[in-house]
Length: 228
Ligand code: CA
Image (cartoon, rainbow, N blue to C red):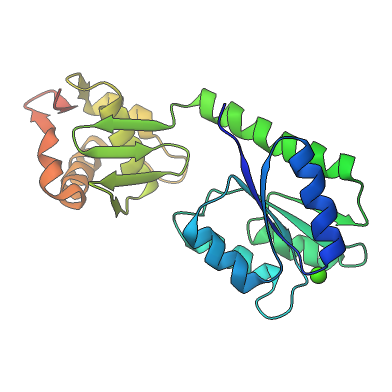
Protein backbone atom coordinates (compact mmCIF):
# COMPACT_ATOMS: atom_id res chain seq x y z
CA UNK A 1 0.00 0.00 0.00
CA UNK A 2 1.13 3.50 -0.81
CA UNK A 3 2.17 5.63 2.18
CA UNK A 4 -0.26 8.51 2.50
CA UNK A 5 1.23 11.97 2.81
CA UNK A 6 -0.46 14.53 4.98
CA UNK A 7 0.32 18.23 4.98
CA UNK A 8 -0.40 19.99 8.28
CA UNK A 9 -0.76 23.77 8.18
CA UNK A 10 -0.78 25.29 11.66
CA UNK A 11 0.97 28.33 13.09
CA UNK A 12 0.68 27.19 16.69
CA UNK A 13 3.81 25.10 17.12
CA UNK A 14 2.50 22.93 19.97
CA UNK A 15 -0.61 21.93 18.02
CA UNK A 16 1.47 21.32 14.90
CA UNK A 17 3.74 19.04 16.89
CA UNK A 18 0.89 17.18 18.56
CA UNK A 19 -0.93 16.60 15.27
CA UNK A 20 2.23 15.58 13.40
CA UNK A 21 3.32 13.21 16.15
CA UNK A 22 -0.02 11.42 16.23
CA UNK A 23 -0.31 11.12 12.46
CA UNK A 24 3.21 9.72 12.20
CA UNK A 25 2.39 7.20 14.90
CA UNK A 26 -0.41 5.96 12.62
CA UNK A 27 2.06 5.41 9.80
CA UNK A 28 1.35 8.51 7.76
CA UNK A 29 4.08 10.63 6.23
CA UNK A 30 3.72 14.13 7.61
CA UNK A 31 4.95 17.49 6.47
CA UNK A 32 4.27 20.48 8.71
CA UNK A 33 4.24 24.15 7.73
CA UNK A 34 3.30 27.23 9.76
CA UNK A 35 1.85 29.61 7.16
CA UNK A 36 -0.54 29.71 4.23
CA UNK A 37 2.25 30.88 1.91
CA UNK A 38 4.37 27.86 2.79
CA UNK A 39 1.36 25.58 2.39
CA UNK A 40 0.74 26.76 -1.17
CA UNK A 41 4.43 26.45 -2.00
CA UNK A 42 4.48 22.94 -0.61
CA UNK A 43 1.43 21.71 -2.58
CA UNK A 44 2.94 23.11 -5.76
CA UNK A 45 6.05 21.07 -5.05
CA UNK A 46 4.16 17.92 -4.16
CA UNK A 47 0.43 17.24 -3.98
CA UNK A 48 -0.35 15.55 -0.63
CA UNK A 49 -3.01 12.89 0.00
CA UNK A 50 -4.76 15.09 2.55
CA UNK A 51 -4.36 18.52 4.13
CA UNK A 52 -5.06 19.51 7.72
CA UNK A 53 -5.55 23.24 7.61
CA UNK A 54 -5.82 25.73 10.44
CA UNK A 55 -8.15 28.56 9.47
CA UNK A 56 -6.56 31.31 11.57
CA UNK A 57 -3.14 31.85 10.06
CA UNK A 58 -1.15 35.05 9.81
CA UNK A 59 -0.98 36.42 6.26
CA UNK A 60 -2.67 34.08 3.77
CA UNK A 61 -5.29 32.46 6.01
CA UNK A 62 -6.91 29.05 5.82
CA UNK A 63 -9.84 30.30 3.75
CA UNK A 64 -7.51 31.69 1.09
CA UNK A 65 -5.50 28.48 1.06
CA UNK A 66 -8.69 26.45 0.66
CA UNK A 67 -9.85 28.68 -2.20
CA UNK A 68 -6.50 28.42 -3.96
CA UNK A 69 -6.50 24.63 -3.59
CA UNK A 70 -9.97 24.32 -5.09
CA UNK A 71 -9.11 26.62 -8.00
CA UNK A 72 -6.12 24.56 -9.08
CA UNK A 73 -6.97 21.42 -11.01
CA UNK A 74 -4.03 19.57 -9.45
CA UNK A 75 -5.27 20.11 -5.91
CA UNK A 76 -9.00 20.40 -6.50
CA UNK A 77 -9.70 16.89 -5.23
CA UNK A 78 -7.31 16.81 -2.27
CA UNK A 79 -9.36 16.42 0.91
CA UNK A 80 -9.07 19.17 3.51
CA UNK A 81 -9.83 18.92 7.22
CA UNK A 82 -9.94 22.39 8.72
CA UNK A 83 -9.09 23.30 12.27
CA UNK A 84 -11.06 26.03 13.93
CA UNK A 85 -11.67 27.54 17.36
CA UNK A 86 -14.84 26.46 19.11
CA UNK A 87 -16.42 29.89 18.90
CA UNK A 88 -16.07 30.28 15.15
CA UNK A 89 -19.24 28.62 13.88
CA UNK A 90 -19.60 30.99 10.95
CA UNK A 91 -16.07 30.04 9.90
CA UNK A 92 -17.04 26.40 9.74
CA UNK A 93 -19.89 27.20 7.37
CA UNK A 94 -17.67 29.33 5.13
CA UNK A 95 -14.92 26.71 5.20
CA UNK A 96 -17.27 23.95 4.14
CA UNK A 97 -18.67 26.16 1.39
CA UNK A 98 -15.13 26.76 0.16
CA UNK A 99 -14.72 23.03 -0.23
CA UNK A 100 -13.28 21.73 3.06
CA UNK A 101 -14.31 18.11 3.60
CA UNK A 102 -14.50 18.09 7.37
CA UNK A 103 -13.55 20.16 10.40
CA UNK A 104 -12.31 19.81 13.95
CA UNK A 105 -12.87 22.40 16.65
CA UNK A 106 -10.06 23.15 19.06
CA UNK A 107 -9.27 21.65 21.43
CA UNK A 108 -9.62 18.19 19.90
CA UNK A 109 -8.21 14.86 20.97
CA UNK A 110 -5.63 13.08 18.82
CA UNK A 111 -7.98 10.13 18.70
CA UNK A 112 -10.73 12.28 17.17
CA UNK A 113 -8.31 13.66 14.59
CA UNK A 114 -7.12 10.20 13.55
CA UNK A 115 -10.71 8.99 13.29
CA UNK A 116 -11.58 11.86 10.91
CA UNK A 117 -8.50 11.28 8.78
CA UNK A 118 -9.24 7.57 8.49
CA UNK A 119 -12.88 8.26 7.66
CA UNK A 120 -11.86 10.50 4.76
CA UNK A 121 -9.40 7.97 3.37
CA UNK A 122 -12.03 5.23 3.69
CA UNK A 123 -14.51 7.37 1.79
CA UNK A 124 -11.96 7.98 -0.98
CA UNK A 125 -11.23 4.29 -1.30
CA UNK A 126 -14.93 3.55 -1.72
CA UNK A 127 -15.15 6.26 -4.39
CA UNK A 128 -12.26 4.79 -6.28
CA UNK A 129 -13.50 1.22 -6.22
CA UNK A 130 -17.02 2.32 -7.16
CA UNK A 131 -15.89 3.94 -10.36
CA UNK A 132 -12.89 3.20 -12.40
CA UNK A 133 -10.84 6.28 -11.69
CA UNK A 134 -8.91 6.48 -14.93
CA UNK A 135 -10.19 5.60 -18.35
CA UNK A 136 -7.69 5.82 -21.17
CA UNK A 137 -8.52 5.43 -24.80
CA UNK A 138 -6.04 6.41 -27.52
CA UNK A 139 -4.48 9.62 -26.16
CA UNK A 140 -7.61 10.65 -24.25
CA UNK A 141 -7.39 10.27 -20.48
CA UNK A 142 -10.57 10.50 -18.43
CA UNK A 143 -10.27 10.98 -14.69
CA UNK A 144 -13.72 10.02 -13.48
CA UNK A 145 -13.20 11.13 -9.92
CA UNK A 146 -11.89 14.55 -10.81
CA UNK A 147 -14.25 14.95 -13.74
CA UNK A 148 -11.27 15.80 -15.92
CA UNK A 149 -10.24 15.01 -19.44
CA UNK A 150 -6.62 15.23 -20.51
CA UNK A 151 -5.20 14.90 -23.99
CA UNK A 152 -1.44 14.44 -23.97
CA UNK A 153 -1.47 16.00 -20.51
CA UNK A 154 -3.49 19.07 -21.50
CA UNK A 155 -6.79 19.61 -19.76
CA UNK A 156 -9.89 19.89 -21.94
CA UNK A 157 -12.92 21.71 -20.56
CA UNK A 158 -16.12 19.80 -21.19
CA UNK A 159 -19.65 20.40 -20.04
CA UNK A 160 -21.01 17.71 -17.74
CA UNK A 161 -23.16 16.35 -20.58
CA UNK A 162 -20.21 16.16 -22.96
CA UNK A 163 -18.22 14.48 -20.22
CA UNK A 164 -20.87 11.81 -19.76
CA UNK A 165 -21.09 11.13 -23.49
CA UNK A 166 -17.33 10.78 -23.74
CA UNK A 167 -17.27 8.40 -20.77
CA UNK A 168 -20.02 6.32 -22.32
CA UNK A 169 -18.27 5.98 -25.68
CA UNK A 170 -14.80 5.51 -24.17
CA UNK A 171 -16.13 2.81 -21.84
CA UNK A 172 -16.65 0.44 -24.76
CA UNK A 173 -14.36 1.27 -27.66
CA UNK A 174 -15.61 -0.13 -30.95
CA UNK A 175 -19.14 -0.45 -29.63
CA UNK A 176 -21.84 1.49 -31.46
CA UNK A 177 -24.24 3.52 -29.34
CA UNK A 178 -27.52 4.62 -30.88
CA UNK A 179 -28.68 8.18 -30.37
CA UNK A 180 -31.40 6.84 -28.08
CA UNK A 181 -28.84 5.07 -25.93
CA UNK A 182 -26.76 8.23 -25.73
CA UNK A 183 -29.83 10.27 -24.82
CA UNK A 184 -30.64 7.68 -22.13
CA UNK A 185 -27.14 7.75 -20.70
CA UNK A 186 -26.86 11.51 -20.45
CA UNK A 187 -30.47 12.17 -19.58
CA UNK A 188 -30.56 15.32 -17.57
CA UNK A 189 -33.38 16.46 -15.33
CA UNK A 190 -32.70 20.04 -16.22
CA UNK A 191 -33.27 19.96 -19.94
CA UNK A 192 -34.45 17.54 -22.57
CA UNK A 193 -31.86 15.86 -24.76
CA UNK A 194 -33.10 15.05 -28.24
CA UNK A 195 -31.57 12.99 -31.06
CA UNK A 196 -30.72 16.20 -32.86
CA UNK A 197 -29.01 17.70 -29.84
CA UNK A 198 -26.89 14.55 -29.58
CA UNK A 199 -25.55 15.29 -33.05
CA UNK A 200 -24.86 18.89 -32.14
CA UNK A 201 -23.14 17.84 -28.94
CA UNK A 202 -20.94 15.30 -30.71
CA UNK A 203 -19.81 18.03 -33.12
CA UNK A 204 -18.92 20.24 -30.15
CA UNK A 205 -17.21 17.40 -28.32
CA UNK A 206 -15.09 16.50 -31.35
CA UNK A 207 -14.06 20.10 -31.74
CA UNK A 208 -12.97 20.34 -28.12
CA UNK A 209 -10.98 17.11 -28.41
CA UNK A 210 -9.07 18.59 -31.36
CA UNK A 211 -7.25 16.01 -33.51
CA UNK A 212 -8.37 13.29 -31.08
CA UNK A 213 -11.98 14.10 -31.99
CA UNK A 214 -11.51 11.84 -35.01
CA UNK A 215 -11.72 8.82 -32.68
CA UNK A 216 -15.42 9.47 -32.24
CA UNK A 217 -16.82 7.91 -35.37
CA UNK A 218 -20.23 8.42 -36.91
CA UNK A 219 -21.94 5.18 -37.82
CA UNK A 220 -24.38 6.31 -40.48
CA UNK A 221 -28.00 5.65 -39.67
CA UNK A 222 -27.14 4.19 -36.27
CA UNK A 223 -25.18 6.45 -33.97
CA UNK A 224 -21.65 6.88 -32.72
CA UNK A 225 -18.73 4.86 -31.48
CA UNK A 226 -15.29 5.38 -30.04
CA UNK A 227 -12.77 3.95 -32.47
CA UNK A 228 -11.48 0.64 -31.03
CA1 CA B 1 -3.86 29.56 14.21
